[in-house]
Image (cartoon, rainbow, N blue to C red; front, side, top):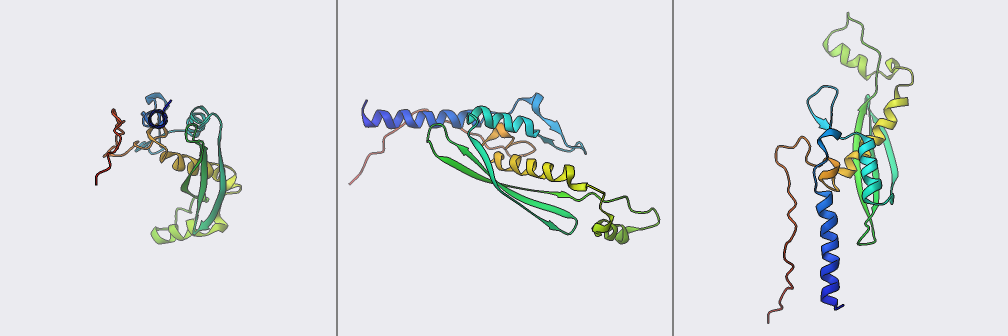
Length: 176
């Protein structure tokens, strides 16, 4: 096979993965946020898609978190092995969660209730037992968004990006 044909075959394989990643997720996989105002994909769907599309060759690294006031923010690096290009691709994901605190007493008002929520002495016991794993999952989901629509990139967006595969590969002509 000629070099030109090999290059075109490689481009087509790359494009095929882009086409798959650009598909919308199945409607039955979408869930509503607790307030009902937005949609999201649960972490089990995202991890299964990563397993299927990258043949289990994905990992996370560098999960870092810090507390800011009464929230915990974090970032993680998601790495996937591109099955055609044979390289590792990295994406960074970020998220935050509020640290759950006990309900403020009813006799507190306005700013005082905010101060109550900021005081970590009012933190619920074991508040981060569920919160930190959720934070990590949210970071993974955020990182995977940049891989394509199948991971929920266009969910809740008013302007949607659309992938259009190149239908005809042209070899650039050199001009003198």
